Image (cartoon, rainbow, N blue to C red; front, side, top):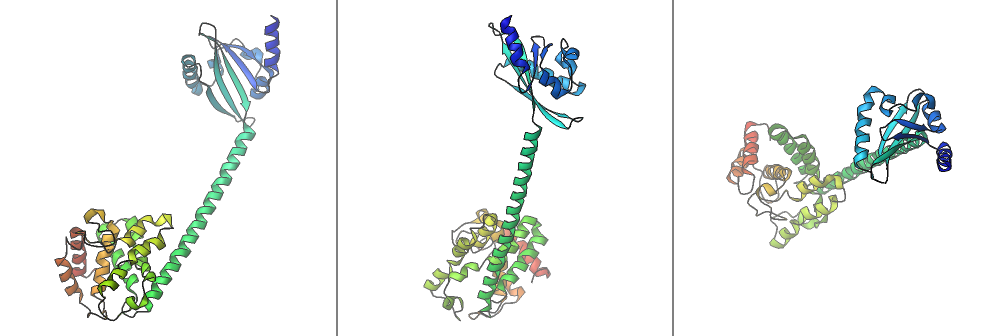
Length: 331
């Protein structure tokens, strides 16, 4: 008896609310803190089944939880309750206590006021979310500045050679038109727009004498020129968000038959954006005057490109491309 009195005193002075249920889930004890937190009275609740003390919409959930607790002695069931009258938030934790035979002797329900903790966590979450948005905004601005700077570099490189001036802009416009009319993928349209502007940025690492040479390149010079897609990859790779665009810029000189560079990719292994860019890049090069060759007409260019469908170019994309040029939609 003295031990029971001692336990009652201890339970009565706990900092959290405590409700004790017997094996039938009838309420046998409520401490004063539980009365205070939940605005209830022991006289009204003790002797009643705990399910009868819950609103209809939550009775089934509590019933299932109590059944589960009887099957798993290590389990703890928690419920968050919002008291609209006091504008406080409580956490109820249910835990079963077993007797010496492994049978449920009682269930303890611990009631804790977590209002301030919840507000603190919510405030911290909102602060972290605001910080995350600021970081994203800063990254977006840095990426935009980086892309603008690279575009200026490409334009400066092309401006040094009257034969290539405006090449990247034309390739971009041709690629965008083709994707819009023939493929219709918004992400691909976005990717080829940026890759088109930057696909020759790697030429910053090629000697100017090679870039502006007024004649055909030697084998050694051509080998150096073939390095510009890899240099472009090195320049663009630090921007993680542009991985797909980097791949397009890197592989726009691959061939459908695997005889291109830098990696000798073939067929569908070549990113679709790179296959599109290869068509636009070749068409613009053929229809532009270069120091080592005269300008071809659009008709001459598509006639030549048709010969290389399935070898240099993706046969399906290539057919769509030359048909659009033939129709006047491109060119």
